[in-house]
Amino acid sequence: MKTPKIVGEIEHRAGRQLNLLLGAARKQYNRFMNTAEKASDKAAQRRYIRAAEQTIDSAEKIIIQLRKRIVAAQKSLMGGASKKKRKVKKRKVKRTVKKAVKRAVKKASRKAMGRKKGR
Image (cartoon, rainbow, N blue to C red):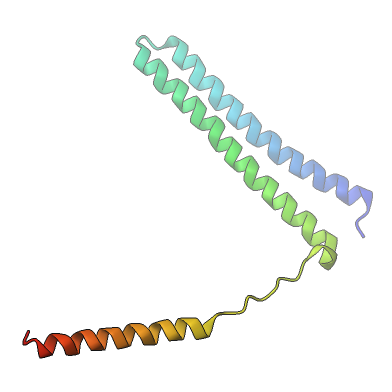
C-alpha cells in the first residue's frame, strides 16, 4: 500500500502539470485579448477573440483527457471488485443463414427467368 508521502508527491506532480496547463492557457488568452484590444478593425478583433476561444476549448479537451486518465487509474487501483462480467450475446445464426439461402434462391430464380425470356 502506498504511504501518505508517496501519495502526496503524486498529487503534487499532478497539480503541477495542471497548473502548467492552466498557466499556458491563461497566458495565451491574455496575449490574444491584449492584441484584440489594440487591433484597429473589428474583423481582426473577432479573429483574436475566436483564437482565445479556441485556446480555452483546447485546454478543456486536455482537462477532459486528464479526467479520463484519473478515472482509469482509480478503477485499476480498486482492483477486480468493480468489474462486471458481460453477458455473451448469442448470435442468431439460423435466421441469417436462412435469409442468405433465401436471397441466393431468389437471385438464381431471377437469372433463370431472365434466360427463359431471351435476354
